[in-house]
Amino acid sequence: MSPSIKHRVRHVVVASGQAGAGSSTVAALLAFALAGPERKVLLLDGAGDGALAELLRVPKGAAAWPVGGGVTLGDPRAEMSRAAWELTVTDAGWAWDAVADACAEGADLLLAVAAPDRAALAGCYAMMKAMAVAFPSVTVQAVLNRHRAGTRGGDDELRGAVQRFLGWRMGRPWLLPEDACLGAGTRGGMPLADAAEGSDVAAAVDEIATTILDGGRGAHAGRMPNDIHARV
Image 1 (spheres, rainbow, N blue to C red):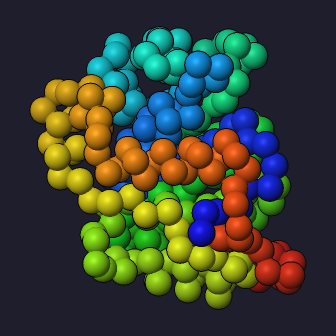
Image 2 (cartoon, helix red, strand yellow):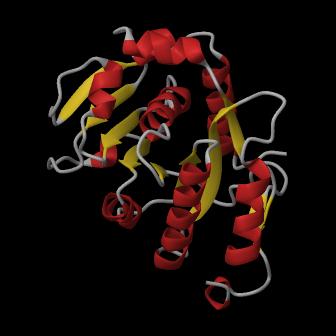
């Protein structure tokens, strides 16, 4: 079942608990998936590491740079009005201060990206816990990146930790499949939009975008009746 988003989402923060988990790729693909003829999306480099510019093959440090498909890459440190964009997606990377800064900028949804190894899962869980305490009004959802078909790949471990220590009833996180071709394409110099065309990863991110836009269907992850602050 799809995760439940109970209110209109205008600002999505994508973050991870460890470098290399894939928050920049997920954020960029999500921005393209959310954009449409009547929806312009501002994609912000909240991490400040230039990873988005490299993925999209645009100059680093630009205050606002159209990258096609209704998406504009921006620098959150530049002075700009966000009124021209219907939705904002911020890649906050893995540094907690950057994630906190992004969540403080009116975030509605935090997508916590984990890779299927113990260090990345632990980092993701710890980041989810910290941000849930600091920003209780922000909905938090998990994304398991580079998931290998036919394996649990950290799914149960992440769900168990979230339910035991955060007090959330969490179904399966969104699963983004492992795709060697996508990684090889971007490392070889292809813009992300070209490398991801027709990929299973892009299709999975499209499902996330659809859930965000339609408000979600069904119950996937939510807090238990217990107050969360009594659990952390």
